[in-house]
Structures are given as structure tokens and as C-alpha cells.
Length: 132
Image (cartoon, rainbow, N blue to C red; front, top):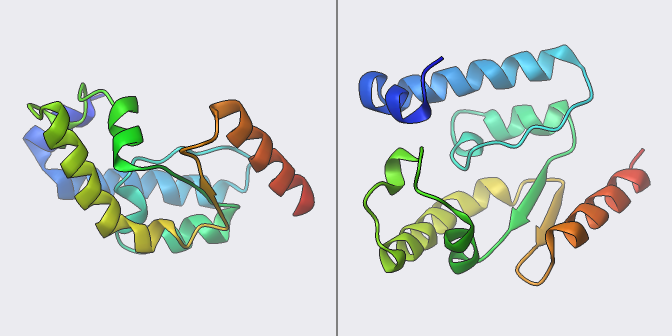
């Protein structure tokens, strides 16, 4: 019932990651067909990326720091509070560099800077239809 910001503020990032992990475990154990859109840090903690990959098909929507920054709103994202536009882009560049090794383990990696959201969806569906 708490917001992400409140969990970070009052319980810390480690506790937030533990809560995320428990959700990943429940989803993976359920065996249900579903789509899970994770937060950016989830695949980098513990063996979350490995668990996600074992549970289903993982997709990495690769975008440049500029494109990500343009799509983000700092609201509800504790690490982005108070950043100006240039600072947000630089923050995203650092984050992408740190997280890329984890994200690149996805079964499907789509370079999305030149794709519309609709085109990305079409490519994901095409990939999944070929893997069933």
C-alpha cells in the first residue's frame, strides 16, 4: 500500500528490492501467462534476470538516454527527484552503462529509438509467434 518513494524513504532501497524480488518469485512460481514490465533496477539485483529468463521470454527495449529521459517523469522515482533535463540524461547514460550487461541477457533485444511503440509491439508479437 505504500508508494515506491515512501518505501525508499522509510525502509530503504534494499527493502524495496526485497519486495520486488518476492513479486518476481510469486509470478515465476505461478506458471501463469502474463506480461511483467519491471522497473529498471530489478534485473540487476540478485539473480532476478536469470529467474525472469527461466520463467518466460524476456524482452529488452533498448533506447538511448535521451529517449528514455524524454519518456520519464520523475514523479514517483526517488532517484530522479530534483534532476534537471541535462542531469536526467547524464543519469540515464550512467544507468544504462551499468545495467546493459544484465539487460542484454534478454531473449529479445529491440533497438527502439527508431521504432514507434506500435512497431515494437509488432516485433515482439512476431518473435513470440516464432518461439511457440
